[in-house]
Image 1 (cartoon, helix red, strand yellow):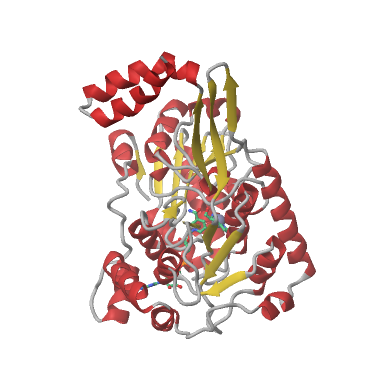
Image 2 (tube, helix red, strand yellow):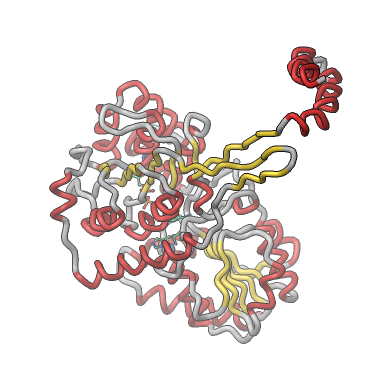
Length: 438
Ligand SMILES: NC(=O)c1ccc[n+]([C@@H]2O[C@H](COP(=O)([O-])OP(=O)(O)OC[C@H]3O[C@@H](n4cnc5c(N)ncnc54)[C@H](O)[C@@H]3O)[C@@H](O)[C@H]2O)c1
Ligand SMILES: N[C@H](CO)Cc1c[nH]c[nH+]1
Ligand SMILES: [Zn+2]
């Protein structure tokens, strides 16, 4: 694989989110499904318009067309109560819920009211009333994603959470997703995925209630749908196909670096990036990837190979300062630091969804039980967005409660500003109270 350096590396790592690259496999599948090579955006526009008008019937038709099954949309209370899984998996789900909850309970999320001689000013913090959580389920049933999206919403105090996830080929949701929902106290679970699920949450249908905000990651169809419904409904981020950038020096273990890159590469559509100060390590990691890839079972091997061959980038940096500069330019979802002194690099990290410091903190651990949500901004959107967190599920309401003394002090300046803006009624509203005090 070509080793990039200097300007070539900078060029390869510069991104523009408005031009989401569409893999050839997606266009080919669209041709099969729709008889023409529609872009995902064209497909999503059709789906949104249809669900808006026809509601549940459109959900079922699109699910039948793209997922091959016409499911019962709502998972019944009996099915939720009856879902059973292996006890070890159940215990792991409980551990993940506990660790993610502990993490978000530490996030400051309280309002304040400052009472002083001039009255009071402050901010009220209120939870959203109803939130939709999208759980990807196309290729892998992402049990952990339900936990990593719903827990911050629950910690924020959201009283009602609606979960949607695509049905599998038997028209069912993986039982562990159902059990995780039950553990979280979520009772509204729907068998629908893709853009049609996002449309249902944004517009509401006969069976799925309209929500205030849609959260959760997904493939290109999901991400584009979230982008297009924004405004009608809130969205927490544009968390799409995953990506990992590893910064490694000559002390890093090629085996670990390869393992971490492959772990994310097995998400179909992923983009693995390796930046190293050591040419030798770059060569060793490529050999390791080859070996570890062959040892993976199918279909994971094919998914990982597609990411490695289709999108992997390998960069030789002159030093760790340049490595960090390239990483900040790329703004990765995950930044893994596998260097002699990884903590010394943290101060230079400006753009990333999450940073994984040192070899015991592999990103795959963060996907499950470390604590922070694994739902993180992709595609370069870490320039302006953050991982899912408690603040995504709250609004802030400003409070103004100044008293007459304060009004007398600051009111005249407000009237001056109002008249400068040509807004006479504003000025008079203020003066009406000022004159009463004379
Ligand atoms: N950034 C993050 O935080 C994060 C976290 C978890 C997962 N992810 C990403 O989520 C994605 C999950 O993707 P997935 O595909 O497995 O599951 P998904 O649930 O996101 O998408 C599957 C759905 O897409 C729709 N779809 C697929 N092809 C279609 C077509 N041609 N026309 C119309 N609709 C179509 C179908 O409705 C299907 O049910 C991966 O890319 C993964 O990397 C990201
Ligand atoms: N790494 C993915 C995107 O951050 C999330 C995930 C869920 N399960 C496994 N991995
Ligand atoms: Zn993962």
